[in-house]
Length: 218
Ligand code: 5GP
Image (cartoon, rainbow, N blue to C red; front, side, top):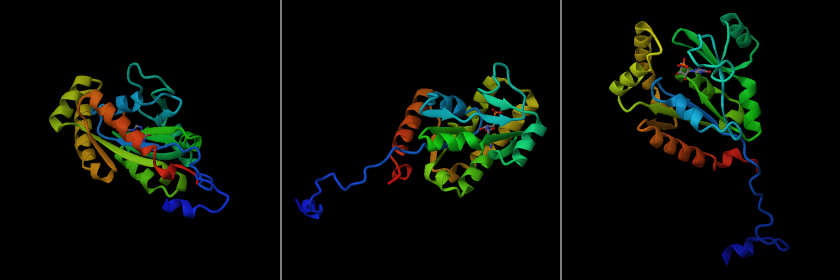
């Protein structure tokens, strides 16, 4: 065969080929308006071992059933801003009048250990991650925008939740429509369908992205 003559004397295929080492984790940034099932989808594909959900810090109040340290780290505003001041946050933004942010240590430690990290963050936070010049982040980053099937469907889904008062609901709808204009900034756009279809497509996207050679050391 042609290729055989290229193998240096004394070496037999596949000797001499640097096989890919263990891979780095993927940093999966997921954005989209509330009501697309984005958070449920993100949590569904996390197994807590090989794929973890990045638990954010927030200054908003916990909703019924939400657990501190699992859904969010619920912080007082002065604590949150002190962490920002100390450079502990990877990204942070004000969303619906409250602060939200991702802890730096959590992201970096997991990526280096080959664990995929899913960040469910808003479009401002995603811009900050994309702008990050850190080589590790650039190698691991994949960003996905989840779109609702339509604005009417989004309204219906949000109304079904009934977790907030009328004024907050309208603010969320307004923000959602503004947020949706950002989808072309993302590598992937997933238009939500059924939960099963969304999950299947998201899993298949992650499976492909895990094959990226940029995740391997040569
Ligand atoms: P919710 O209050 O409904 O849980 O989240 C409101 C919005 O904040 C969602 O769009 C969610 O993606 C976003 N968000 C949650 N955590 C973070 C974070 O750590 N950083 C940023 N930038 N946005 C976040």
